[in-house]
Image (cartoon, rainbow, N blue to C red; front, side, top):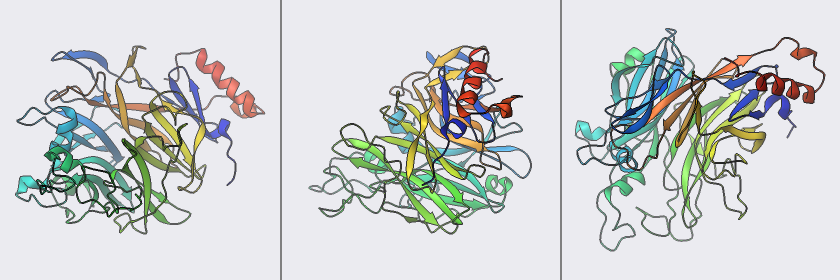
Length: 436
């Protein structure tokens, strides 16, 4: 594998945020957002043009694409706690829906329009693979068509007495049934008007179901768990021009003995599938005890200028970031073999506001990016909460839209070495309030 110049393509971590420098001398750095901290029903939230907040529902991951009309179209996860007033960890599994919002700007003023996808149980179908809930929207445009990748799940029902899952409640039965699907459509008018075919079957389903106990429909004993174990969630799809293949990255669940998220990739000749999952674990970063570092929420993209894949993942332990739990960045030449960048911390759990204050948050995850035509990130979208999720029901989570500023400084091309370039940017950024 060829070596890559980390000073020119890696991550330079300065203060609490990161600066991404690409090989044409452009610097990318997270900008501040137009928002303020406020209290709603005793819960701290961010509110403002750069935040998607609903004071009656929970809001989570959001994915955005620029449409043929020049508008920015967002699909996002949203739900309420339901009549039983479920807490966050239960309500997303049982009540998740996908909604649509639009803006003339990529990083602010998104306006909610309607819920576009619910569990099929609302149409009277309780047996479909996505009957109970839908979640994890990931919108992409390929070959002048749009593809909404999402996860869905259903309740297989109370299990027989004496079975390995007789004690599982509905929440955990539904959680263990998650698969990935896709909806193909021509325009957002078609999407809003329901002019699309909802898939009868998942695009990708788990091949193994390995868990010591409390498992629906377990695999036979001695089965080796594949990366698509028990569930496939968190879809991220990228086109690899060298192979002319579509690569679908996903998360599965391992238990050794406790839960950890592992990742795999499935390959197809078409964005609509069929996708064939590979056996190898992706993003295989190990902890000191040799176990895989638990992660989730991959967002993968391909940079056409650098001819490299990059991925942002949520790191639970700080093993991947090399610093603390947060968002880590990895890189790959072929999309299969991954390694950490020189500075693998992509973003701490902090939000910088336009008044220069920095808000420490409890959660900043489900990363999604808006890219330019060359695969350079323009805007970061992240699911966020200031406080812990445990007690949240109908408000307290939101999505932040953080611009990733691009800038070239006069004289940069005159610097003769990587070390001089690094020192130049360190001096520039330490002597200012950032690139605004």
